[in-house]
Structures are given as structure tokens and as C-alpha cells.
Length: 188
Image 1 (spheres, rainbow, N blue to C red):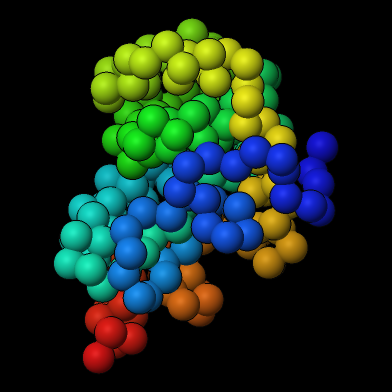
Image 2 (image 1 turned 30 degrees about the vertical axis):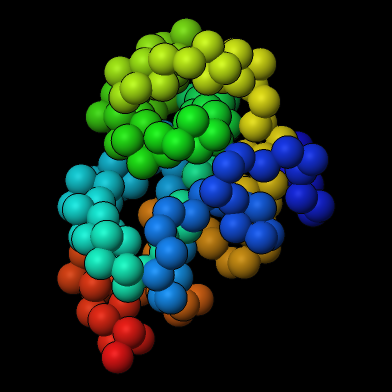
């Protein structure tokens, strides 16, 4: 159930308000609201992911990923919530971005079951999350409350679809050119 207050535990790399995972340390903040069940988010990752990597690597931007459970209703086993929670476990292991990319690559179709918890662990293993702590975190669903909080907070901010991208809190089209242009303009 969505909650208004921050959960007791947030993943490593969470911003001060706890509703995502921050990558990089650049001055311009890019907020990316995603759902691992969302086909458009998969397309966003495939097209914009390299541009986001470049913005972080160049020191221009901090990208805050907000893995929402927006599409739970389109799976039979709350896959969006479980995938979001497992991404928190990946953040604890320092592998959020490669894990998120691997989840999108393994994205199940809408309307049925998502990956099982064991398959979520296997996805982690494929990107270097072989530490048993990761598997325990996923199977225990440690970050389900965090996932609900991320989703609740996004809704409170007016996010009604995924992917949604904000650059310094201003909405921009979820494509690499628009994001890069907005970040570059704010960096001058």
C-alpha cells in the first residue's frame, strides 16, 4: 500500500528524500521515472541510456532513477513492485544501472506473470551481483515498502505515466536529444 512517509530502509545511493537511486554527481539533476514492466521504458533505456551515461560520465548531470510500481495491474504477480524492489537490492550492490538494463532486456510481456524472485536473482548474477546478500535481499523483498514510496511520491509530484523525464524539475521529452539539450543549456 502506498505510504506518505519515507520507508525505514532505502537503497544505497538514494537521494535525500529517499525516492530513487542517484547516479553521478553532476550539478544538473535528471529525474527518470521508469517501470520495469513498461515497454516504452524499455525503449527509453535503449535509446536514452547511452546519453544518460555520457551526461553522468562528463560530470554534467546526476541521474535519479525512480523505479515505480505503476504497472502492477498489468501483471498477475505484482511484477512492477518486485522488480522495483529488486533494483534497490542491486543499488546496494553498486550495480543499479547494469541491473536495470538487464531487467529491461528480460522484460516479460504485459498481462501475465513477471520474472520470479529466483529469476530476478539470476538477472543480478548475470551483471555481477553474485553476493548472497543480493539474493537474500531480493527473496526477502526488502525494498517493497521503498517501491511503494517511490510510486506514491511520483504520483504526488504529478507523474502519471512512464517514462517521465524531468531536467531540474522541468518536464522534457523522454528522448536523448531533448535531455542532452536541456542539461547542456543548464550547464552553461
